[in-house]
Length: 404
Image (cartoon, rainbow, N blue to C red; front, side, top):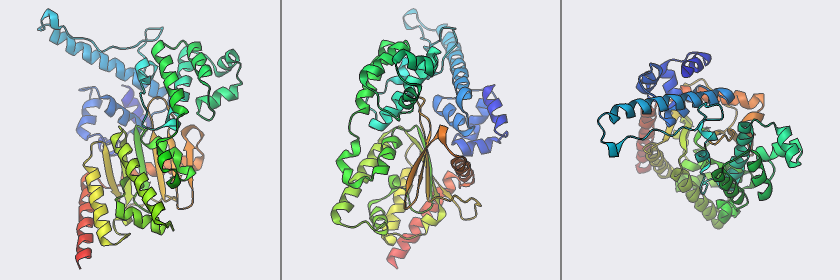
């Protein structure tokens, strides 16, 4: 089984270690590896990410998963068909195949590009469009050189379009889609994405409060499928309560009532978009953040309550890295964003003075080491239940300090 091979390549982690890395329960992982159940898409993606599946391995894993899913559906449907009345015959799971009859990963299925109105805005639309055009080209079996020559482009221009580093006119995008043999539905999605890529970002209403380097993160975070972050200097903005956020602003030398109000309005809109999206989150907070008092005990008690509330939301988890964990990251904050639809992962490194973005395919050795450290942070963080107890204890402590 491919998952077993990937597990062995990753050092054969125990089921418990896999559970910590992926957020999937030990019992579920045990049933999957023993062949007793087929994982859901959500679980399969979590396992793929936890086992650091890449490139061709990911494509093979999706293909194997769809075959297993189809076989399971067919088996269940055949059993139920024996007792079903003629007018209620079960339907089979539709599976797309390529020209060779091989079941394809879902990104070659037109339904994969049913983007609708993207929550991430124009930057996310540009990234998805570039990834989509590249996947269509690869599925067609056409090299970048061949496609560029047919379009009258340079290879570097086509590469920049596929990596969302250069804009593309609607006419050229439609010609590329037709060159790659895209279906009518996919061509319509190309048109939709080009239009969205040229639209203003949702944060334009708050542009006075948005530093230029932050606009990309605002576009990407609610379009991601998975977010992992570690913070040691302050609680991330996505999780901040109002009083705590004001205290952070003052610490950052922000002044003026208008700036503060704009920043709080941006934060509220950002949080709503994020938690209304389908992104799954794992926030790792340094234990020091449960003791460093910003804004006074009342603000901290309110902030702890906010964190406790977020832990109750489906798909979102907050875990605490304890003092005793022998892990050190040289940055104040690191956020790793993973996407569906073939978009490469992006890592964001942030400190009090700068914010830098790194494409997964262009990351330096330093960034790769940082991501390995982030994985170690995840492995050494306290469990969900222990972290929740720590948050509750911190809230009680701050409430006691406020009264005394």
